Length: 84
Length: 379
Image 1 (spheres, each protein chain N blue to C red):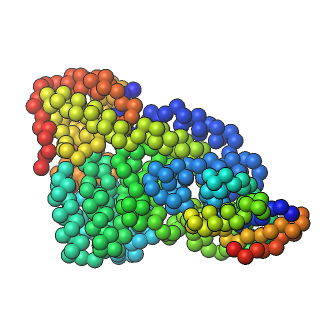
Image 2 (cartoon, helix red, strand yellow; image 1 turned 120 degrees about the horizontal axis):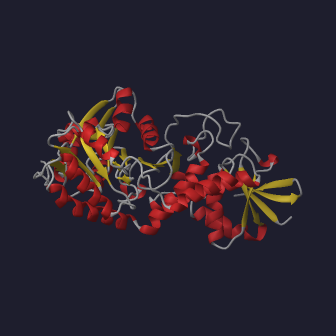
Image 3 (cartoon, helix red, strand yellow; image 1 turned 135 degrees about the vertical axis):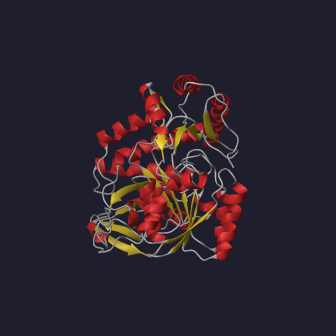
């Protein structure tokens, strides 16, 4: 699969990260965090194309807007956590 | 109506504010409550307002917390920093939104700087008080809501930074007119209403937070639902329950108006109107309280008529001013006007020079005789 999911602590944090990514020309979609990726209940994630991850990660770290976790989509409904 | 009570609430709003409120009411549900279009529209609207406020007030979006009003924000700030019986240093021009929460906590309050329009004296008094004692917090309004006196906040903030005392700023009368920066001031909290100089609807406010603070309300935040406690991070920690999404949409339009006009331009215009008004008031039998460091807020006292009576008579002629103590008895005590209060005139971006001319003409008739009012600083 071609997407990675970035989970955030709040909808505000997710939207702030999306703003930073979009400003750099990276497209990210705001979604409710899939049930399997939740650790403390409901939350929001960004879905990013896998090829944009290295640049996106660098950018978010640079602005102090890093997500809580990164997950790679293996198949529909199946994810694997990847190192931050 | 000639509306001259903008220090309480700006009645005239940019048309975009009303349109934004209606639009949000039609399409927005609740922030962070679901992934459907209406919930996402609410989240987008509220985030856009948060990001714009962060840009205007030099903060990060997560440091912007939505409140009901400035009072709500000040209560949150005081609750976060001042323990029961704690020691607090405040200016002589604070509103009840500051003093009442402190009285409720039995705080030991030191009041510094009581000379109206004397910034040097205010600063000296703060410096002396900080040298003499330790405080859990310093609380200072940027502008007196009664007199429009601009306090030396930058310098007071510098004193707080040097001594590492947390500073709470009441920006109720300054937001939208004077520079407000969370980062540069180093303040712990800055509270402001949405419905005055930011031209948003009533029931909106902002609290800029350097750190997470202590919640006053506990409840749902739309995320981290398995936690028994409120989340540790902003803004969720201080925003329990459903947001005033329609109000916040209106506030966003108000903030856009302020950004477009420019706070400096808005302040300059208010000051120009006030300078144009003062010579005319000088010919009336009343005492004006005015000084160099003043916004578009002016207090005055008629010589031979009760303030409330004059406000009532002006009201009958379609002119809206507020008389009394303006919820700031401490400020009146400082200025020596506690016994009778004052009549307060306050301007906005929508005040017209002709309206002030009409106010002067009607006041002339109501006050009945010519006078020679004292205009220059009362101290």
